[in-house]
Structures are given as structure tokens and as C-alpha cells.
Image (cartoon, rainbow, N blue to C red):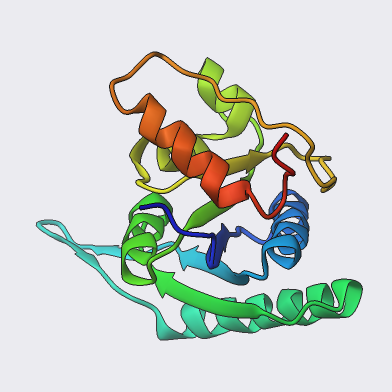
Length: 183
């Protein structure tokens, strides 16, 4: 049985693009009475010698990241008046860390900003966003750079006619029922 959207994860790289996605997520969260979790994955510094490589977690980077997340959180609270915002930070590769957090926190929706990278799909939505879409087990909203939240009146469902599309469509309708009136 599908459930409503209780937790929305917003990964950020502190760019204007990802802050815009956070604003979008916050307005969606307000409509759904959900909690927004702002998240940043710090790149893991790699120490190398002539014979081996060692990943060295940096506590200072995580602390600085969390401080930046808290600043963005306060800015968003002030702008929107909505206060159900939490902050998380960890060291690691962004996509891997996002997937782990989705599982750990039982995330219902991921909202990410989009911007170009390299291949056609990556040009349209960005490589990290494309990787999260391809590997995430919960819905992912890719928010274009200049998009503003407008309460939707319609949802579009793209399909490749996979076996579970009917279940996916049912889940989407159930998740967004509080936002979109059913005709």
C-alpha cells in the first residue's frame, strides 16, 4: 500500500540551482505537510602514497557543510515561514551517500536541481541527478534551474510499458492526492 509523502530529501551542492530546488521542495512540502531534509555529501579526500590510496574522512568539512546547510535552512524558513526543515551531512560520493540516506531515513521523495554535464541525458538533467533517478527506489523530481513551484493541476506519467507501471502510477496518484484534485 502506498503512503503519503512524509520526508522529502533535497541534496545540495550549495549552488543557486540546488537552492532553487530546495525552495521548490519546501513549497511542495508545505502542501503535503512533509519534512524537508537538506543534505550535502562532502567529497572524500583521498590520500595517496606510491603504493596505496586511503580515503580520509574530514570532520571539519562535514561541520562546515552542516553550518552552510543550517544557513540555507534559516534563509528558507525566513522566506517561506515553513519550519519543518532538517539538515544532514556526510562524507562520501554524492550518489552513494544519497542512496544510503534514502534507505536510512525512509525517504519518500527526492527533489534535485538539474543542470548540464556531458552526455545527452546528463546535459538535460545533470549527471548526479541522472544517477539518482536511475538508482533510487523512491520517486525523484528533477527541478529545472529556473522553475518555480506552482500547485500542479496535472501530472504527466512517462512510461516504457514496464510490468510495474500500473503500480507506479497508482503510487504517484496516491502520493500527490493532497496536492492535485482528482477529477
